[in-house]
Image (tube, rainbow over all chains, first blue to last red; front, top):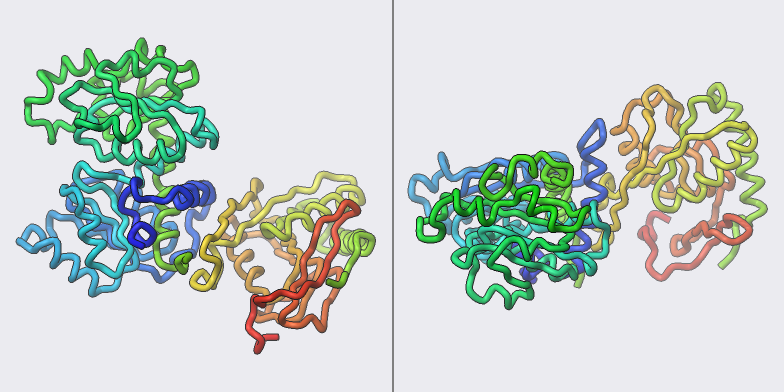
Length: 310
Length: 184
């Protein structure tokens, strides 16, 4: 039931629901290209964006998505909220719940925060990133972007996810969703940034970048999360850029029509070179466009307007 | 199952409808046909083909999906199949003809009108249907119809089906009527 009513992770997301979100996003993409970018579908619904971690693109994307569906969207960020005055997460949620929102979109630095909220609220919880656990809407928008460029059949696709896998909730959500959709997933990172046992999720693990890139259809680069690195993971950023940065030469190892993705924000010159970002195979801005459409689809399907299938 | 219109009836009805459409609002020069997804699409296509034959000109067409404009999302199907609207033309100042297969409660028509108005401000919007069924719940009437169907019971549904010979309209009993008895 939890998996049905809330969107907490791609690990618990049923395949048919994932496909429903992706199919729906196609219709919402069209809404974003119209002169009037708004439909009345969620008129009268209230969505709270509860962001305990700073975020520009995800919060903006969710806010736009809600507004384009005609919902009333309220943004609550940690700085300036009662959290900074010492209120616990439990009390914040109880307070917000008493205002009867239909959906609460939550981002929090602690893994499991979204689940914690889901257990304590009447609203539908949409996880917008919890610690190093999951970021399901990012994986969904990545899958949607791959669909637009590579078609619907993921079984013939190989995706390389490269970079800081250890700290990346984006990587975890993508591994679960991509394997669920049938794609082959490769991971590449220095050993220090690979969680122990990650291959049990059904991916091939490489501790060098070049072999991981050979013949892939999609290259997904991850941000080096400087704020989460304590100093023992990497000797220097320069060394990381030299050994694991995606440049044009390395990209040539992938299929000639391979696409390059990055969830942003990018560290240009660290995990990804300038000319690759600007290059014709980069679909980074398509990902941003897809983000609004996919989040519209998520909010529409989870806002409680629809009775649950039994 | 009984037949309201067979393929020949539909073809002659659509031919007559095309003549009426061409005769009003100064002809078909700025006409855009928009079918309501998904039932209205085959009717819209048949009408467009007829107009192209009789008027000897290309007729612009599009489609509108009303899922996001419904007034009954709370009671609608649990798994809505959203489709994208396709209106690849500027409709500002144009003559838009909304086409559906069956007009019944008019709620679909209301939603389609709202959707179209989000694309621009047409000079005029008209409404054409194959079957005009009674039981309207909103003050909306078709401008063009092939058949006015009365005496359709509340537990009967009108389906427009595509056959090798063309479109035909049939009445079938349904186990769960889409509208409650007191409306019928």
